[in-house]
Amino acid sequence: MQATRVTPNAHLLSQHVANRSLTPMELLRRVRSQGFTPKEFRTICVAALVMLSLIVVSGAAVRLTGSGLGCVDWPNCNDDTFVDVSSKHAAIEQINRVFTFLVAAAVALAAVAAWFRRPRRRDLIVLAVVMLVGVPAQGLVGAVVVWTKLYPATVQLHFVLSMVLVWTAVLLLVRSREPDAANPERLRRPSFFRRRSAVVPRVRGRVRLVATWTALAVVAGTVVTGTGPHAGDAKGDDGKACTVGAARRFFGNECDVNGNALVWVTRVHGVVVWITVLITLSLLWLLRRLRHDREVLAAPITAWIVTALIQGSLGYVQYANGLPVGIVAGHIAGTTALVACTAWMWAVTTKVATPATPTDP
Ligand code: HEM
Image (cartoon, rainbow, N blue to C red; front, side, top):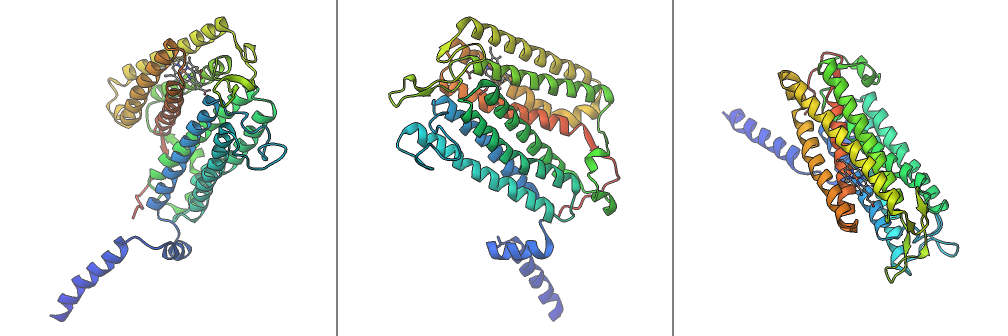
């Protein structure tokens, strides 16, 4: 009689303990003894993805406010001081540099969590390490950007590498949602080398084509930026461009935008985007009779199309309105979102090659 009363209460109590949020010390002890659960690891992956996406927009804010040369040196802000907030541009540039440390902390946590995740999976560790190495590498490229006085190819490389990091973070997140392999031996080797297609080869090939052309659209877009008015000219505090420092251009001279070149590179960018959209439509056409593959790709492809529609509209609106900084910033955020959707689409076309059982708590 007594036992029947105590058991449900004990059960409720242990459930209450499990549900209440742990203090940082309790969490640390728990992680040391039992590691991170797959669910906790996923939450950390989401945080890393959000931080890697936010820094793209904060980096863009530096360029769009003309603060790219707010600090003329790296890691010191200038010859005299490490931190200088005497001008608006130096302050903006330095906020972005501080933000880099927060991003580094997020990806470092993701790497630590990948190591302490239970069960440990080598594919997740490899992807987390790519992010961990990528962030300081981006810091170095950022330094080269400053040292070369915003040479456009370096700015372009900086942007493209950010997209690679966002791509990696999405891949890590999607992979972390997959069930762990039933055979623990297999967890020791990176399972992404031994994956099998989750869709028919034609569909997988078409998704790769969409990804390739999306990448080309991004690269073409960075050429437009490196030719146009937002290449990073340092504005004076009176808001006038080129009073402090001028950025080099792909076409045209410093502070002297070559309007004709800008029109042509924008046209090329637009054409590449339209080809990408047509390839995506052809993918939709392919999927019309393939129910299973349509289900696999439904969420990422829908997200891709909605994002591309908004992104394309922003592209035309900003161009027609003389490239106002607010819309250009939106176009950069849209690029980040589209790259994330493309990585998602790519990631779901394969799955682990081993029979799997869910291990989620
Ligand atoms: C949906 C696909 C699109 C993608 C992925 C895309 C991507 C990009 C990227 C990555 C940049 C460079 C951002 C930077 O370096 O900071 C850019 C710039 C630009 N894009 Fe697009 N774009 C798309 C659609 C369009 C369309 C349809 C137009 C219309 C012509 C357009 C016009 C521009 C212009 C004018 C710039 C230069 C903005 C500036 O001064 O910084 N884009 N785009």
